[in-house]
Image 1: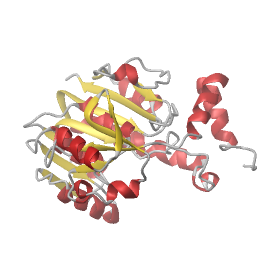
Image 2: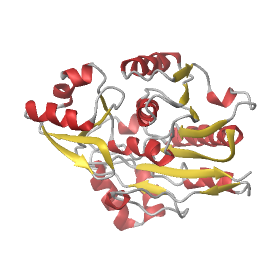
Image 3: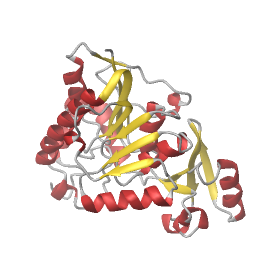
Length: 304
């Protein structure tokens, strides 16, 4: 990659083939934006009205998001300033990108359900689901990497998510006799939706080999998820990639089995999102910009 090239040539070619010249240009412009700092409220320890009061007292400017009362964007301050607040230190808020808050919202976990988070570290989505269900859902959080699992356990404890069972295990190795009411699979991916032109190491880690490795993991994880979800129940597959080889192609492999169907994604405020076209009707792909990382989400139901 030469000094005049913003992203790797192979990625630009892939984006142009998938989205066309005009949309690819907008995506690259999104890579050039400085992304905002955002967090969500942990309802197990506080509520959004009191968090608003704290921010006002500290003279910290903020904006709210139409699709979640618990999502905040903070303005004109660094992340370090937020991390120095007691509400952060006490686990009353959790710093999290807006895009990554969407998969749990789309999954819509309920009290009393048995829920699996297949690749849970560092725990943002896990603890979000605990917050959404008032600690009244049984959540199993899997993380195969022991170091990342320690971070997961730390965040679970800090957020007060007392009904989360942390399992240091590759979720693909769970016995098939386990079954769940809902499954969240935020799969490991290339991160093509999160790239920044200000990162001068892109060409060192963002490679075609990384995409190939991600595809293999995504495919095997989603196949496992289909074995663990109960009949008539739903799972969410998500990635922080905007490439169809990691998204629609992976989902389509599952849809070849007539026992699975897409549940069209729909929620209040969805029209406010910067959406990219997808090749599967009812799925969602977000275009990277100053507010959002590029992100793909599909909701899948097991019919029987």
